[in-house]
Image (cartoon, rainbow, N blue to C red; front, side):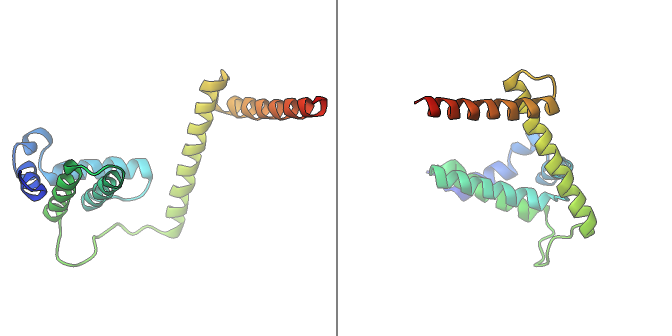
Length: 152
């Protein structure tokens, strides 16, 4: 049986490049998407490290050779996308106000997403209506429980 390191080396330096491009191309593309989604800068090295953390989480749930192989592969990719010279990765400077605004925007996006989910379950037309419907339904349920309790 091959070790996770051997399997990872074959994957990183083998035909996978034909499928996804070089590690730098692949992880830089992913970093751009994650940066746009999260509203914070993410670089190719961050993508490798976050993928390693995901594999650690999976390994905690169920031990599999695939997790160890992928951890080794992402570590190799992190080395390849560099720079790897013992210094922290360079990130664009962002002010506290920019970071706060990005966090606020993400919070709003999450609330809108939650309201849209409620809309699907309640049959309301839009997110705001859904939230009102949700609160109304919760109040009706609470009143129903109170009335049944008084009768009981």
